[in-house]
Image (cartoon, rainbow, N blue to C red; front, top):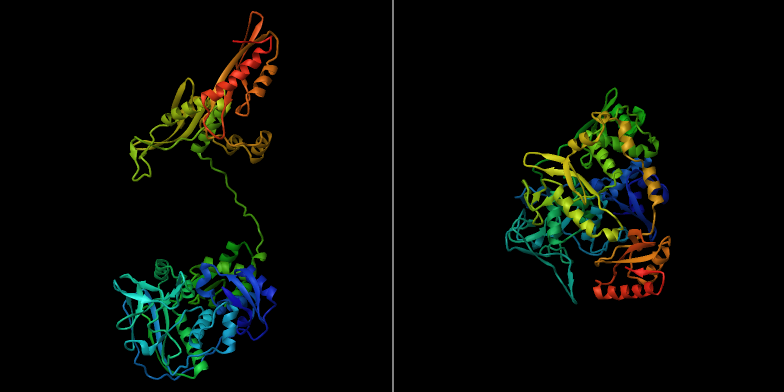
Length: 619
């Protein structure tokens, strides 16, 4: 929301603080100030008003009230001209409860023309284009008070009757403004649905309620008589319809965040006063349809409640000062306040909201950041303790943890809907562990692992219950049992029934321990290839006592860049004065799938190099 400094000044008798001080005050007590820009002899703040305060702060009046409270400055309420209105023939009928209030007033003998300089300057400062004095007046009051307004040309209506109703299927409306399609500029026509809320005369739609007006009753240079609309609509309905037609206006921004219907009366007086000031028009009486009047909330809060929740020791007099600065009506007893919540402060619903008001107005810097003292003995979750114990035991035994999919093709518990063909929850961990064991064994050479030992701790889903299971496996097979049996079978008798915080902390490594372990094994990571690998074994007799390093170096130098792992010995023995070293070589490409022929060429080259050494013999 763009806010003009000069515009704000109109709300105060005394001079406002300097620009930077106002910005700092708003930032630390209310909202984020995203930018500050010069606009001629004015300064404009771009203030990020969040949705929880959009109902009362998307306006200069709302921000002025915030500044009044923050800097303890007295705000002056604007006085509007009191008219002696003439009787009216205007009729208003609300047929849908999504219209919460509708005020209409006929103003005659208007002269549509250029706006005065001061009005254009105010609108231009906040990035609004001047159209004509009537439209500009409506826009000015909206940005001033936060309530959208619309004006219809009275003489273009079928009669002096306005109906707020649902549209019927097949109805359409040509919207104000235009849209560009290629090189053509044309009026945007909307085909309405049967449940769209509209403003209509006795024959045609005049506007999409709360969103945008139509061209039928557009105010133009020929307009002599107008109907002023100041209305309130259901915020959810406005948001849905706006998104449906992809129309986002300043009116939508305010309605979708909910505005109090109580704002309508002040707005009607303000717009009538301004149009009269510009034209000296003839004013008729207001027609006000207000089916269900908004209730004024009362919230009680005590000094102790506020200080307890803020962790402060504010005096009763300090808290009372906050209510006065916010211009809240209140009554007080010994240690309690009863607040009459202003109609426009829809965000205040309970004492917790009043606590926030005290904290932000008096200043968050006055709240000491202290951690509360809580005396309690930690309770250890037995199941999680046993999971942690089982995990540590299996890791210490050389197993690696895995996690497999909880969904499967068959089972006892079927899910209601699934994105895949796996519509059942698993009844065991073994099936998934076996698949993982098989896959990891195939990849063992690439992983540089001599043996694969894996485990999983997870939930299985039986027809009548869920159980936590432990499954572990290696080349000898897979074993599975529930967590309770695993714990009792493998733990000592001293650990049964012993769950202490000290024991739990021993099982759970500290962050510093983890960090030191990570640092000790730190290395540069290179992504794996997405293509399959090929293994080749080569066994060579060498003289007894000769190291394998020279042979390993030969293998590395001649295996080309396709060798992705260090050659390693997987078998070695000595016989008849000679030693046999059997090396495994792993080849893989990052660009394609290797063929046997490509690897065979490399192995042939390696064999020739080995034969060149008279001390070595290929097995």
